[in-house]
Image (cartoon, rainbow, N blue to C red):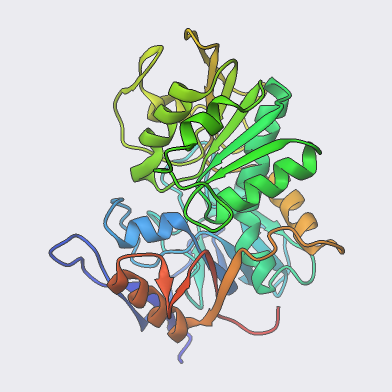
Length: 363
């Protein structure tokens, strides 16, 4: 491989259904403007948002996805970090929507990734401890950080007696674990498709929701196609005060709730990158009790640091069992294309929760 090119997991043009496949290809290594950083990704995660992009449910244009992971510094730019330093990238700029790593800029599914100077100056490239490039830590830190951000907002607002987690993928399972660690004795209901979850179509689910002791907190961690259904069911069946972290995205426009139509997508973006603080939480009066809604985009650096500390700590590991697949670049292409061909989140007969792509050298 010449210094002018590197390998990347690249999206191919969409098919007639709006979905795409991926291939490992040599691509030009981007030139650096003054202050830019060049990173060599070691391990990157495949997340639910990536699957939505690949299935054509989002219009993000980046040819190379990947916004979760750990890399080594190749060219430090204006970061003040030495070459070879182990870092992670906060993928969401709190003030500049033109920087969204792996969405509208080439991401971490590559042997080289450019980070523009504006993101470097904003402190979005963070040094991480030794060992952070290992697959579990590198792939789970960003989703865990997002869970911790949502939990911090909830703890600022109320102390719930019960938690409903709607969605039993990576974020849902990390949320259940983080909330139970933070609030021992918290009664928890997981809604999803796994053996330890209540199926969303289970006829007993409305009663299970109604019997949760209040105040009830909820984390919606579904694909964006399921967010409205989850929110409507929680609103309809939970009695008393209900606090909802709309963690999952959803289409724009009003959602019909018992308190009236609410543009949930608009209010979900009210918290971004750790700010503002106090956070924006929106209250709606309903007959069954107050409904408090909030969401958040991105995370703050403190959330990422806390997530890595938890994942690298001894004892019972955070996110146990969530990382289901670890592959190299070629294996990632096979995994992604297999999942897209199967039209579900399984590969080789095994459900894909979180997958990690090992790209570079020693972690």
